[in-house]
Length: 137
Image (cartoon, rainbow, N blue to C red; front, side, top):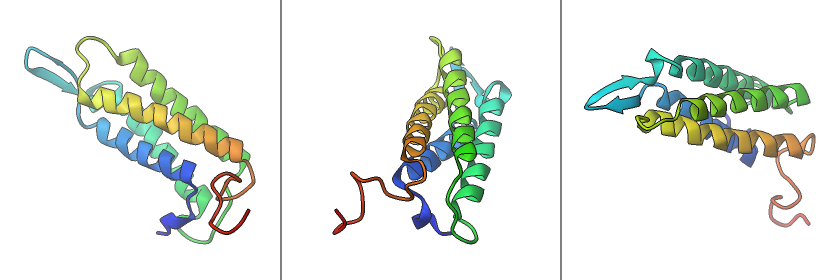
């Protein structure tokens, strides 16, 4: 695995995806000491979306295998998956929400930020002009 091939927005997305996966196995709702973990409900949806996002990210960035540049279609797919995760997290949030749901919501928002940022970078590669490697102006 070559995680150094990921741009900063892709790293943000990767971390957010990992947190969404973790959040699916934590309590989403808790009331009077009784809790429901995410995979007993909509957490199963966010888990599937995050796993699909992880596969797309790994296959299109060259983390495994030869180096690749992600295409626009994969970037849009990651953005759509991120929006769906954030929407599910927002939709399910209520007064009985527990840690797993909050992690899913905030990680979904972070994933949207990373996906939009990467989409805005377009085909410019790993670095944007503002965050390029040292010594290149």
